[in-house]
Image 1 (cartoon, rainbow, N blue to C red):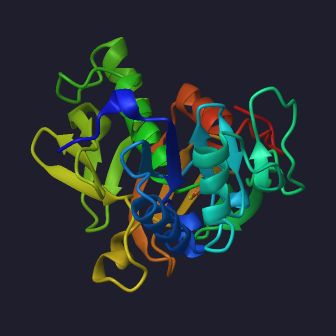
Image 2 (tube, helix red, strand yellow):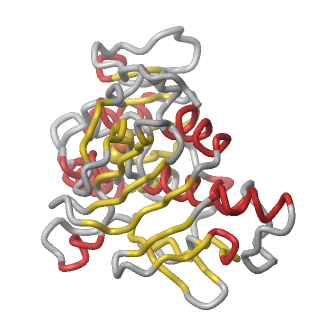
Image 3 (cartoon, protein in one colour):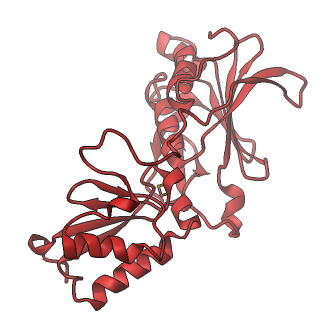
Length: 283
Ligand code: FES
C-alpha cells in the first residue's frame, strides 16, 4: 500500500545519479532508510531516489523538503545525523549543508565552473581535411535535446528529399545522420525522435529506425561499447560544413550528423557548447 501523503513530514530526495553512485551514495541511502525503518519513522517520512540533481561536483547530494535544504558529500557516516536532524528536531544539519532557502550562495568551494567546454582547436581528419573541433557533453540531457532540435526546426520532414522548395533547401542544409553501420539518412526522411527506452534514443526515418545509446549502463557490460561517451562538434576550415561525431569510450565511431545549416550551428554553440565563442570567425 502506498504512503498516506497527508502524514508525510519530511521528504528526502537522494541522488542516485551516476556520479553520486560512484562516490558512494548507495551506502548513505541504505543507512538513512534503515534508520527510518527501525525507529518507526518510515510512515511519516518519505524518501525518493532521483537521477542527477545537477551538482555532481558536490556529490553525493541530497535535497530535503520542506525548506529546500541541499546537502553535499553525504556518506554513510553523516547520513543518519542528517535524517535525525530533520525528522526528530525539525531542523537541518547546518554543518553539512550546501545550500538552503534564503542563502544567497552555497557553502562550497567546488562551485560549478562556468563551462567544461574547451576552445576549438584545429584538427586533421583521416582524409586530410582540417576542421575546427571541440568536445561537447554526452549526457542524455544534452543529446536528446540535440536530436529534438535537429528534428524540429530544420525543414519539412513530411516530404521526400527534393531541392524544389525553400523548405527542401533548408532540409538539405540540415544534412544527414550516418549510423555506426555506415548507413546515411537524409534529414528530410526523419519523422520522429523518441526517447522512451531507458537507454536508447530512436531516430525514426521513413524507411528505417536508428538507435543511439545515451542512457546509463554498467561500465563492464557489453552495451558499454554502444554508449555515446564522446561528442565532438566540428566546423570545416572554410566554415562551410559542420559535423557532430559520436564515439564510445574507446574513440570508436557510433554516428555522425553532417550539416551546413548556420542556425543549427549557432544553436550548437549557444546551447550545447554553453555559449562557446569560437576563436575563428562565426559563420
Ligand atoms: S549524479 Fe548526483 S548530483 Fe549529479
